[in-house]
Structure formats: C-alpha cells, structure tokens
Image (cartoon, rainbow, N blue to C red; front, top):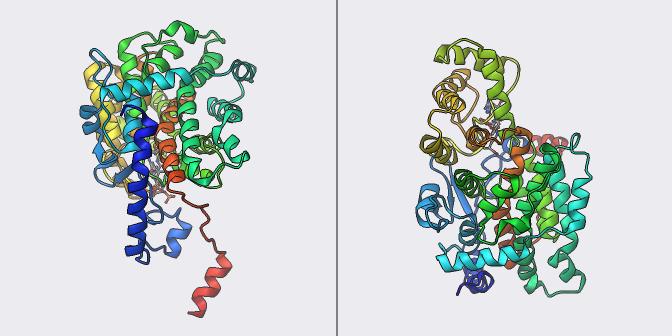
Length: 440
Ligand code: FCX
C-alpha cells in the first residue's frame, strides 16, 4: 500500500511479538552496567535504553534503520527529474517503517503533508509579534511548537478517554501535522528576525514542493542547488540514536504521555545548547573570528595551529570537533564535504574548513584530553549555508531542529506503539555513594 499509517499498522504486531519474545528469553540478561564514574560522567556509554530508528557505530557513524548515509543517498527516492539528494519524506518513511519507500509511497506522503502544512493564522500572528531582536530563534521555535500544541490529536484523545492501544495513531497524526508545519514555522521566524517580516506567501509555492524545497523557498531562496542542500541537510540531521540530548528529551517527556508537540518542544530546548545543536552557530562564529585573527597572514598549518591553541587557552572548546560516542570523522561531515566539493570547491570558507580538517585533530591530539579529535556534523553545515547567502548563524540550529523532527517523532510513535512506560531511572546522592561503598 501507499498509505503510511496502514503500512505502519502492519509493522506493530510483529515488532511487539518480537519484543515480548526477546524479553521472555533475555529479560534477565545484563545489557549494561553503570560505574560511579559513569553516574557522575553524564552516563556516557551506559547501555540502558532501546531506540529503533537509528543506531550509531563509534567508528562508522550513524545508520538509519541499518542504512549508512551513502546508502540512503543511493537508495531513497529523489526529487524529479534530476535531484541527487534523498527526499526528507522518504527518510521519515524509512525511519518509521524500516522500509525504503517506493516513489508512489513518497508521493502519497508528500500529498498528505501538503494538506496539513498550513500554520493557523493566529499562531503566525503571535510569531510575528514576538520580540525578534531579543528572543533567540530557538526560543521562538520552541514557543511556536508549544503554540501549535492546542491542535494535538493525542492530547484530545487522551482527554476523551482513548484506549491505550490507540495512542500511536494519535501520535502519528500529531507527528505528521507537526513535521508538515515546521518549514513554515521555521521560515516565519527567519523572515521575521532577519528580513523585516517580509514573507514568501505559501500560496505562491504551487503544490509540487517536497519538504526541502518548500523550506528553501519559504526561507526566500530560489536556487535548485539550495533546494538540494536543504534536502541533504534535513536528511543527515534527522536522527542520531536515542541517548543524545534532543532525542532523549523527546523520549523522556513523551513517556509521561505529554503529547508529541510538548515532547518535541522539550527536545528543541535541549538542541539549543552549545554542546549540542547550537554548535553549528558557534562554528560559524568561530570560523569568522579565526579569519579575522588570521588577518593578512596565509592560511598555513602553523598559523592555524597557533590560533587553535589560542581558542583552547582562552578556555573554550573548538566547536564542531569531538563527540560523545563517535570516534572517527562523522559521516554527516563527510556527506557535506562531498556536497561542497561538488558545488563550491573554491569558496574561501570551505577552503578554511578543509584546512582545519588537517590541523585541528592534531592540535586536539596534542592537547591530550579529547576522546575524539575528528570533526562532527556541525563543523561543516554553516559553511554551506553561508555560501548560498544564509549568513545569520544564530538561525542555524532552527534548521537542525526542523530536521530532528523526522527522527525523534518517528521514534516517539514507536514508543507509544510498543506501549513503553514512563521513564524513571533511579538516582542516588553522593552521601549514599559514600555510605554504600564504605559498608561493602
Ligand atoms: N575542543 C576542546 N576540548 C574538547 C573538545 C573540543 N572540540 N571536545 C572535547 N573536549 C574536552 C572536553 O571538554 C573534556 O574536557 P574536560 O575534561 O576539561 O571537561 C575532554 O575533552 C574530554 O571530553 P570527551 O570525553 O572527549 O567529550 P564529551 O563526550 O564529554 O563531550 C562534546 C562531547 C561533543 C560535548 C565535546 O566534544 C565538545 O564540547 N565538542 C565541541 C562542541 C560540539 O561540536 N558539539 C556538537 C556535537 C554534536 F555533533 C551535536 O550534538 O550536534
């Protein structure tokens, strides 16, 4: 079939059965342990949750439902007639169902999303009246998601006493509506904050637009290359397994049966942290500062090494490098590098990013603290955006957020389909640790 909801419905029972069987067979096996250091250390590497839509290998990077980014670029449907990057809707289909969709399936999903896409006029009005100068675009974005919440099918169904077995249907309904509306929300914030509130009327877009192109055009960009960049961007930032701050926040808040709007807004507040999604904004700021500090001097290894040390000695991290789980170059970085090599090989800022790829890992190795000296997704994204004229780096994390809806909401639908319970891990005090281990 080509109806996502019906295709998904068929997936639930076999998956549920599998989980029941696995729990019967291995329910008492130890999945992971947690040392005192791990409890103090951000629970790094503690295996204590399941998450179906993607899995991160420390060496190889992310796989969406088992497919690497290059495999997704090859297998997922593209824009007609000559798109080279996967359609974001096709990734959502893959994440939710586990199947690579057909062109017909993606076409129907796009049609469904187009019908849901218009943001209610009064919500736009509130967005327009926000203090754009003072309110960070991510604060506007999270607020907008909470404003859309009043239409939550999940919240309404719960209030009307819906049966638990139907929660997933309402969550999927909310996920589709929210994802469909995020491009207009995100663009509204961009045009309000940086273009004096001059908007591109969505009515003028025609109806042949996929999520990437729709976002590009609403932001005010016209080039087909930028459409492709948006498709790539929305695909690669979508999901990064379950323990990262944004995905875990969505899961955690959703586990209280807060509806998908509430849960996703929580995730976006987490994405807005500089160690997580805000790193893309920090990277561009840092690159611009680096260029200023370099002045007339040439972009040599020696000069850049000196400036990287300056950043470290000022007590800052080098944004866009390192990762809590990854131990090699992030394939999301590589995908963007390939895009740059294809479309903007001679851009100055790309040249700088390329050169830093040689320099920074050596500096971080020499400093001897980081577990991973290699670049992550955020190191590259800003340079591509600024090349096409999207230079307002405070806005970049909003784009990351639009993309993250695809993975975290697909996963949230599964949480409800599998009936996962309220999350409630146990904490202890330092006093408890001292007493407990002293007695042993
Ligand atoms: N520059 C300088 N120091 C760094 C560093 C970097 N890029 N990355 C890690 N370190 C430091 C840590 O700050 C820590 O120092 P401390 O012992 O004095 O506290 C030490 O190295 C060990 O950290 P490590 O175990 O390697 O890394 P964590 O798992 O604690 O943290 C992040 C991972 C991503 C938070 C860290 O590498 C970082 O701050 N990077 C820069 C910010 C960034 O790019 N974030 C985006 C990550 C990601 F892609 C995303 O979520 O979007």
